[in-house]
Length: 500
Image (cartoon, rainbow, N blue to C red; front, side, top):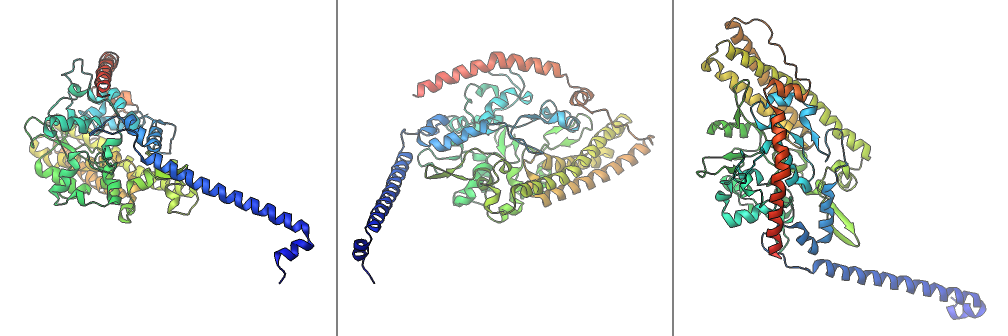
């Protein structure tokens, strides 16, 4: 075999080709080495803290100095442009879309106002605007307890540490208004010293303890769901645990199913409110997202909430968790298609089909419940006794609890479609049996005609039907937003300036 020297002596042009090829290879290798060094330097810059984050630091901007990528992606939660077939991140007035909700919640604050929530960035602002918290004109007034702030702000762990948990729950919502200003953020889920995932709300820890479980033993993958479970759960305010406090409690002692939590509530005789039309002792499902998720196939296969709602993202050679917490349908390639190889349109259509089928049955249950409430009122008007109405009111309570469990769950038709379909079907069965009892009672009271279905075709008509004076509430809220909220924000700005 001829040597390179012999070849180049006979073909001088080949020597130049080899020379230039060598230069190109050396250049590319140098470029690669430079990139590696640059990425390593970048990693050191990212991981080296620029500021010391104090304990219970509620300001996301401070955390953002040490974790700029996560912080910048978090501000993606301010984006309200995404809209799916049955959801999204824009504010939507659900009472306008589903006016029958007004009747189902008659006598409860949700009949005034129920909007589809926006992203975490708006957590505090949306509470200001909600008609469910009233319109307190003085700092120590207001109908709602401070417990309502628990999941809205990273100021809450700070206040619980300063005041004590029970004392925090003993305040009014308005009295803590000047203290709670920062929207959901870093310290809610991360330890200030290590940035490791941690639980900052006692209700979740206490729920685990009552089940004989130690939450500190949870794996990292479990924590990627448990930090969400601090807030995205069913809960109630326990007025018996500590005198004077409305103590936040998760009703998980018997399990996560709709029946298990119903039994828990029935055993302690709890009701969120008494229905204004039927007089039934009602349960209001909050947002049992974690419970429903745990009953579905993704949880069973080890998928966490963050895997789909906060998938990993790469930028500048850095892999990090995208903190733009959002619907996976708005980020299919990074969420769904990591595991599922179908086309995006196929995956979306599959989700919509599940949602459509469950919504169809849910809407039938809503109509049946409206009829049950107005029929129960008719029975009362005709002189029915409490003994005659007892089983009927229990039936209304249990049927609507199942409806609300499905309606209030964010993404339940996706997380556990089989379970959600089962819950709706049992709700339909209970509602049907209850209405049969009502028909028999009405007949015994001399009424053998159909009780007319009310004209609740719009939100305004439904609210008028149940006797709400919405003009008054809106006027009070306008004054509150104009006069009180600016005072709260000013006081908070002065306090936070002193920390610096």
